Amino acid sequence: MIKKEELTLVQEWDKTFAKSEKVDHCKVTFVNRYGITLAADMYVPKDAEGKMPAIAVCGPFGAVKEQCSGLYAQTMAERGFITIAFDPSFTGESGGNVRYMASPDINTEDFMAAVDFLSLCDKVDPERIGIIGICGWGGMAINTAALDTRVKATVASTMYDMTRVNANGYFDSEDSEEQRYEKRKAMCAQRLADLKAGEYTLGGGVVDPLPEDAPFFVADYYDYYKTDRGYHARSLNSNGGWNVIGCESFMNQPILKYSNEIRSAVMVMHGDKAHSFYFGKDAYENMINGNKYTDNKELLVIPGAVHTDLYDGGNYNAIPFDKVQAFFEKYL
Image (cartoon, rainbow, N blue to C red; front, side, top):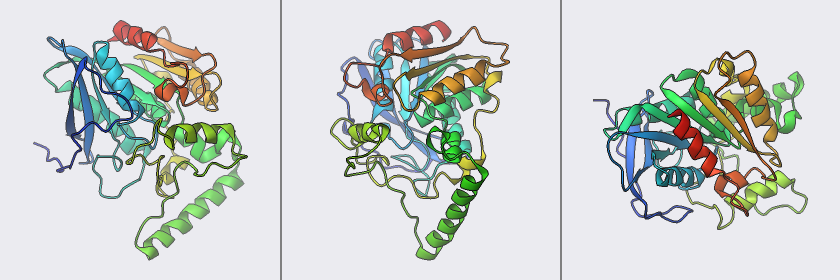
């Protein structure tokens, strides 16, 4: 038996959303292939019988399972799926002895480890497993679908391609060799500064206080992560953020290289007013370009929705859960 790390998990309800009386909830743990123990919330429909379809949920990038991934997981459990929402390696309640680091490889493996867990769960039909990735984890979900043939259906919601934004900046405004060189140089200097200091420097979460001239997408994040709407004490984005060097390797490792070889079903779901919409549109186009399996691929555009509207529904219940449910019922 692969040894798990002993994690101290909060048992009381500490989510940013109300507890449903339609599902049973418990904490579970599982180990990824790097030996990191991951913590998850598991949601099971109260009327569950036999082996059921299951969904693993993660995201946004820098969030915790008590925020919107948990909301997605609980809602999909209400609709007839066994679900887990997990914290990625090095964050939240999950293990990893250097905190607030990220890795395209390890974070893809986190999703695959969640599929391992569900595949071996007595209540789950291992042939009917899907995943949902939100924000930066939308890109990770698509990357996982390209690697893990056990995943039968994937939803990428309000997605980011974290490798693209790290290498090119927002809206590809830093897409040049010169600017990437300066970022690499700064990262290398930061590594030495951290070693000399004996600790890693945090990059800061969502800006607080919010500047009067902040771009809309910064204000959008503030409205979710820094207010009663979505604040959580363990959330990186709500507090000190990732380590400055936490996402260093993303600059050199595109995660969606073989997305056009995905055979399983994928739905990219994005608001047309989101600053991040270009990530979703481009990911979908790249995924179907030259792909022999396009009949089960879909770009679902939500009119008027901004980025964080698909975190928790925003001001007008923007998450189309009926369509998400129909998608998974069709392909799981």
